[in-house]
Amino acid sequence: MKAAPFEYARAASIAEACDLLARHGDSAKLLAGGQSLVPMMAMRLVRPAFLVDINEIAALKFVRREKDAARIGACTRQCVVERDEALTERVPLLRQALKWVGHIQTRNRGTVGGSLAHADPSAELPLAAQVLGAKMALRSAKGTRVLDAEKFFSGPMTTAMRPDECLEEIHWPAWSWRHTGSAFTEISVRHGDFAMVAAAAQIAIDGDGRCVRAAFGLGGAGGTPLAFPKIAARLVGTRLDDAVVNDAAHAAATETEPGGDLHASAEYRRHLAGVLAARALREARERARSM
Image 1 (tube, rainbow, N blue to C red):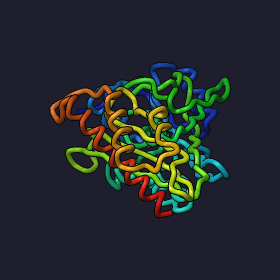
Image 2: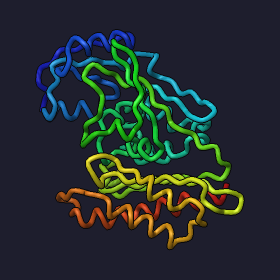
Image 3: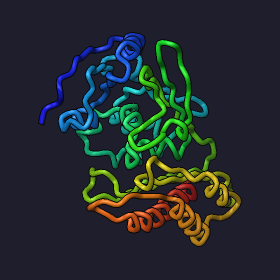
Image 4: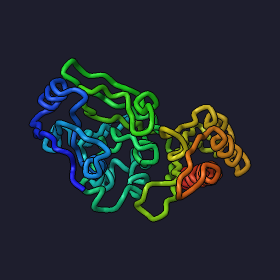
């Protein structure tokens, strides 16, 4: 199939992109990596009248490591993030999530911001952002605002971005505890396919082996990627034995509202959510202990 007719402009700067969005409103779409948008246009699932290409905006391509966070430009290729060793040391969950994203060719072209803006509830980077509490910097002709991940993702493939806004950069929190471990896992029909369910976790422990901070979440188990801060808070102060981990995973699974399709029923996805949440928590625990 072919995309419906549309107009096209390549923006040379963030300001130009924001100006084009302001002029064309709801009829415009941003093109970053295009790994999701272009196939959807080809199948005519989306029909933008105006496409704003932001691929060549150098100001949107960067990785900056700071004391308590990593800042990544929205048009930074996923492969750049995946291969950045210093970044992986600061925010290991990013590389762990990215290895599940499509295939090498997908990550060579796909962008970090494009995946987040697409907001597929089964996608890996939105889940990592939700679990870590990433912040999204949104730019428009009127100025810049910052949204937490929990407010950014508002529904299936829907975000709180306004029609005149461009995702400019993402702030990924970097945990400071020495003994910190993270893990990402998922189940799909084939590697590289959309996840039936995905799970991510990050845990920090003290020298005595007790949990000092925990975060975990599930993808593909609701209309948005899910994080469970209240359940994770129960892990703090424990030694993270299997019974405690399994209890937290089960509690999280009961809060999910997955849908069913030809690949898996809602009941199976909910069961899978509990299994994978426990698996991610245990793997994160073991990595924290080995640090």
